[in-house]
Length: 158
Length: 261
Figure 1 (tube, rainbow over the protein chains, first blue to last red):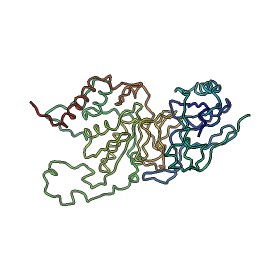
Figure 2 (figure 1 turned 180 degrees about the vertical axis):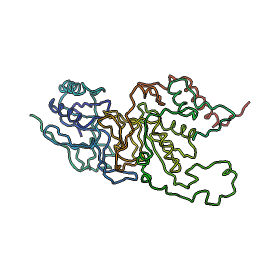
Figure 3 (figure 1 turned 45 degrees about the vertical axis):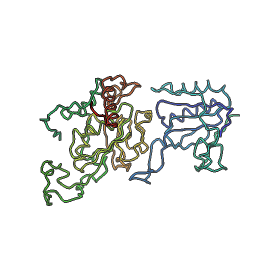
């Protein structure tokens, strides 16, 4: 769960992003700093075929890659469409807009930065029913808390 | 193939509308109009993409050939000529398509209409994001070839997907391909789209090339999808709207069983 005092932005591109574009964008954002939490959302790319006649067979997908952000390797599990950020304060937003413009300057599609509330701030009754009372509040509302493997922590420069 | 009765009592109109989109729809549906051939795909490639049998293998059958079995005395059987697949007793198999909302050349309802006008012995199934057509296996291969080689398919915006079809309403990928969780078709460095998996997602022994994606201008000129962002808006085609409203009104009123005065 997030503290409602922190501002949030969502970076939405008009196309799904390739892993190398995501890597470039996120490394640029990390350099801006001021990011408390970040979530990559998009369509799931499962490691095995989840249903249908080929169920259970390996699903090699060129976009399911490990990318390097800051000093950490991150396994992409989705085809990234949106990046949601939680920031320390609003002063970082212009720098983030600038970073996004820089990364997408040579692309033939647009990308916008939206301000608003994109992460869940209170657990719902459904969350309680699904995950119980002792759920990790750090990730609730961003990913399925039952998922193995916690968040990737990218060390800041403070 | 196009064995539509020539001396019908009326001339089919195929659909209303004055817009380009409506004209494209009529063109696809009208069996007297030849669809533009856009690419060459071999018979073996089609068999590979479909994934129902190994290339070169005999067609498995579900019943003996019609010539070898005693047919009941049925007037309908005397009128209807069986298709090649039915004559041989082939199994019923399918091909399924997903069409992106971003100006794909065809879309599910349109596909079903088009196939019903152009092909025989088929059972199309229309869903919001996908369209399946079932028929006898050797007929299917013949029809699939037409569906894949002609302007009904764009390698980037149309997917041949037997399962896990999700993607028609999503953003396109950076390279212009429609999202596919199983990534059956891949856009190569040379700009050619190749199928690396069959329609249900099993890897193929060799990639099947289906040609270059068509450009945005061609797609917008040949699409059968109304799209208010960047294309022809549905509401701009007054005749189409009027027709749909008329059908809607009539069927609503009919629900109340109106009595003519």
